[in-house]
Length: 118
Image 1 (cartoon, helix red, strand yellow):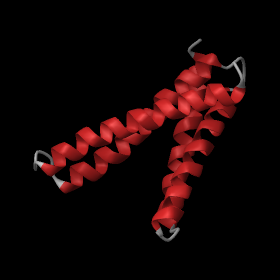
Image 2 (cartoon, rainbow, N blue to C red; image 1 turned 90 degrees about the vertical axis):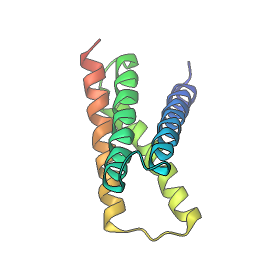
Image 3 (cartoon, helix red, strand yellow; image 1 turned 120 degrees about the horizontal axis):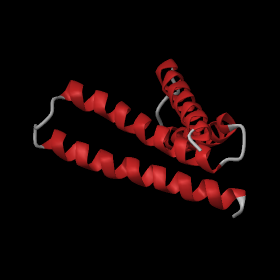
């Protein structure tokens, strides 16, 4: 399996699972089942759990250096989010950079866990 294909499928499944979880979460928020603060916290938690799981899966498939698999996955996700930020016309802020740092650290951690769980 080629590298682009391997990362493309994992990236697609990660984004798809995040979108499905966000859809469910937003539905709960829309019908006032959860509050605004819980909604904001769960958005971050869902994102990080999905990225961690994807990093673990990529790490399990890696032969060595799971952290590199995590960096690659995190970079793909950060690039996508950066493009979406530019398209929507939002400003790049320190908060966004912190958010991206958390994403990359989570994906690296997932890759390292995955390589050790073989």
